[in-house]
Figure 1 (cartoon, rainbow, N blue to C red):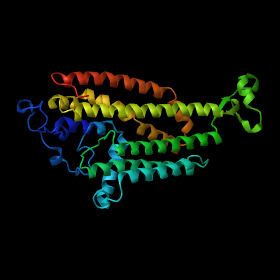
Figure 2: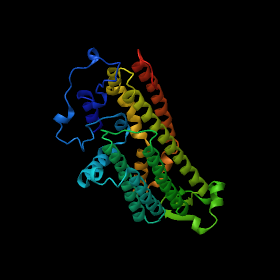
Figure 3: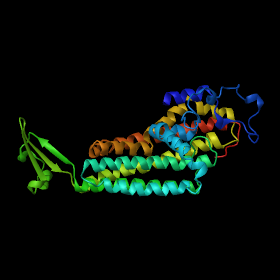
Figure 4: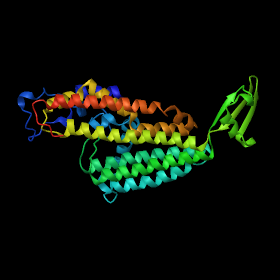
Length: 347
């Protein structure tokens, strides 16, 4: 789907760069030849087609939200007439409603039963769909095409605050589950005398140690202490926070640079937007944005591999994030230099 999105950007007209009268930098001599309109050739209606209106934010949203949940929200909106006929339901009301679903899911995440935790995952995905729906309704009522962050508005802050509560509910629920059902670490084929001293201290009761007979010897498994669990969860929470802050920052910066700043030449902005370098730069955040983290965490919970996932991204996640931040800062400097040549910077 990302390949189709890139081909659509390169071959068809981009409406976000339509020249307006107040764009004083552009003139007839700099306009590109007439390009075909994607809406005229696609067989999927643009009301539900995620490829129709590419924007900066659309390029930085994870694939699940952009290609699955986004069209589902559009179909639901068309079927119910939510945006046009149910004006008493505001986007902020939808945001507040999905907080309650997240709280219920957070409680279910604490249960020992895998079935209950899988129900929690389903509820949390419903919460994510509602999170997409509130943005969709807000854009439809303002007649905004494509994904867009309206930074600084009331809806922006309400949505962000509700998302934060939902994430906290999930993390707290998982923490309580791991506290009450601590994962185990073990030593196979080893005698007690060869175990590390600090491991022997943890084996104070029979409940703290499992012995499994096998051909290679005895397997000793000790429970992971709660301080260790808390440390791993905190490190993961830090990744979520860093990912959220940086993702929102780059969405805002790229929007201002390429979509909002009419003082820059429209052809240069369009050239950057269509470049493979910009597509690569945004690809990092399609993979590393907070929504992707939460989807992977939900998948780990569903497969009963929560602890394994948290340990796997314990350090590697930070390495990937810091690399993406460094690359993004470099690209932003290069893009700004290119589009601002001969124009006053408005950033």
